Image (cartoon, rainbow, N blue to C red; front, top):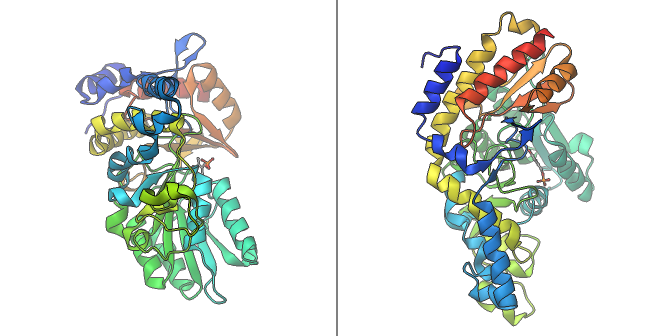
Length: 423
Ligand SMILES: *Cc1c(COP(=O)(O)O)cnc(C)c1O
């Protein structure tokens, strides 16, 4: 599409947007009494207006039924983890029995590593991107140490080439080939939280399997942002949180995917708890763990109903909007943001967009690496009503979310940003 740098044009795009009605379905925070330009849905997604009624339903059922809510609630608590399966399966490209909502992301990453990181004397290395999200780094290091291995030797962290900010797929595949005898596990953030790069999950999975390693992904910045096909790609496992693009509220219940080739293998090693036990006989409370088939057999504890209610509210919105429609708008919306940013006179003297330019290699986020006064610029846009996000040493991350951001948001943001650069 041929873009134009004007408010009128941005408004025309909004008018033509088939998803425009969804914006009204969210609460927007205010800055100095005015609706914020919210571009940080990659940190915490906005609250859908229907969330309150979903949580109220559970509070009412709890008041009305007490413990009997486990069976008599509108959505019986005993089976709560099942109600999110259909939409989650669509979002990650999986079969319903390959996905489950449970715990928190880092907890799930550890649980998956218990199953998929079983180092031997010769095959013990973990390969990941350099600068992975801190929690993932800590998980990798502590897993290595737990197996009496030295992270300096056991953890391979791939850096972009000198002078570049994102990894080339060819370099990732080369590194996998280079370490093929020693690789036990490959884990990448599917969309890198800092650079916004969407990795080629299919190619990484194929190369990883070729080398004899397991391959998993952290979907924190990918789920609800880009379409995924985990089952078809043969990915072994994945984990995600639900409070970023999934709008399920702060600390919302997370999720995990285990490919059916492993999920149906009841001998797969795992840490066990009663909620993963064969459902029909769970309450016999007998000795001897028998896992359920599917990823449900990785559950430990009974389900967090209140946070799960918020999760269902948000997933209902995703189901209505449709991930493919969202992606279509997202490519246009982020494309427009990029176009406007590049229309700033001499923009390269102020900042560089380090996120890949190709739509296939990014989600909705653009990471702007400031060349000078980054902190000052960020403060200035914040004061002017923009909620974005600052990452040391100099990156401003902006994520126009297709569910609730408008082309006008993007237009107004760039105006404010441009003014801040010239201050
Ligand atoms: C947000 C995020 C996390 C957060 O982990 P929690 O366990 O949910 O606190 C982990 N990894 C990545 C890549 C993230 O972006």
